[in-house]
Image (cartoon, rainbow, N blue to C red; front, side, top):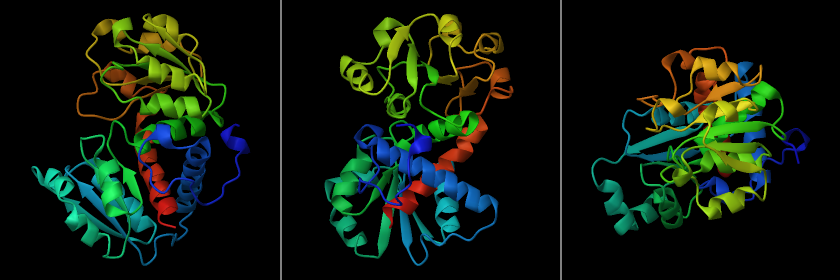
Length: 299
């Protein structure tokens, strides 16, 4: 099913939003459709009361990270009350080893919790301890970043199914959330990496249930048939770096995407500001996706 044929239901099949792989296609479409609706309502100045009278908690190790700002904006725009708890040092490990504090916090009238740490599994563990709906905000494995990529693609092409994406990265180190999101939304994938850094057979076999996937070592060849070029941060060197010349070989309407990081070494700096680059739209859409997640799991 294509996302444009999906009818919004205003609820999720899953109680929490931890990993893309665990979410059904219906849940992915629900989050994306809801994000689009909320974005439009905000654009026209409509007051949104989805979280009116409710508290949303953020447990984070990143005191000044953009996700904290995104969380507060998202929660307040839903008329909710954001509560941010920065956990310095090994505080998160202390909580996870003795989660009595979490059991108490769960009784404070919290509607949902977002977990922003560097450990992929923290959100899953905290979800079980809190017995509350949780959004995994890990920048690598969390669904918000991956779905912000898909939302940007959908806005640009007005569809998802049948598109072709080239994805560059070291798939032995990177959690494949973007690959899962692309595949489950019907986008075919061409991976570009040295063969010894390709995803495991388990990941490949899972993706094949939803979309076509192949591995290619030649970036210029892969890009020629691409609607979407997405790059994970990597240290492969110039032969795998996205340049303006390479992007010119992609389809005329093709777009470039990547998560906004401190280093941004996956492409030439000129690529970030070129007409095909949609990284800033993608960065904005991460907030809209987060807002959608908070809205849906707090109902």
